[in-house]
Image (cartoon, rainbow, N blue to C red; front, side, top):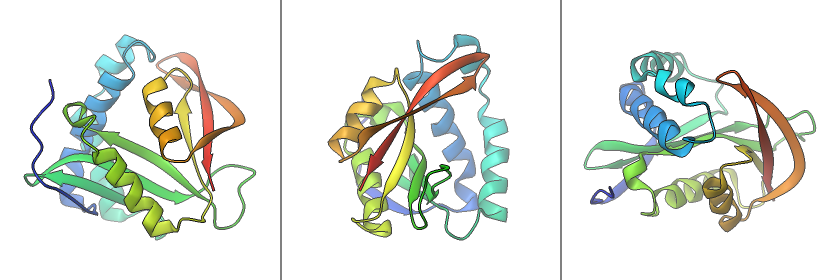
Length: 174
């Protein structure tokens, strides 16, 4: 079901956003990764556990150069994006990495992810190299990244999720 979308505002996340970020995080995983990530793992995701993680992360803070933005509609978090220094072994100084970008599934297709991506690109600079990792079987996300100037750069890795080794592909922009 596609929800009606009010005006969207994007701002830096605060500790008070933790519960809504966690809820979006869990719902997005359960929808986006159905059929990719083991069902039992998706069913085990707990928004309350994620809330505690996000609250600590936003309160105690990541390193200064890591930022999380939230997209809000009607004062409700409907999506978020986190970016910081690239963690890749072959990264150069100044390279950035998108650690996460997730939307409430009811908001898919409304341009909110596009707005979050544009916010990050504007913040880090159009010429800054930015990478991200995406599950190889997540074609919807891969299409989105290609539309925003990212391309698979040939680097792959396996990530253990829910007891299975799943292939991830690195995408690069810049």
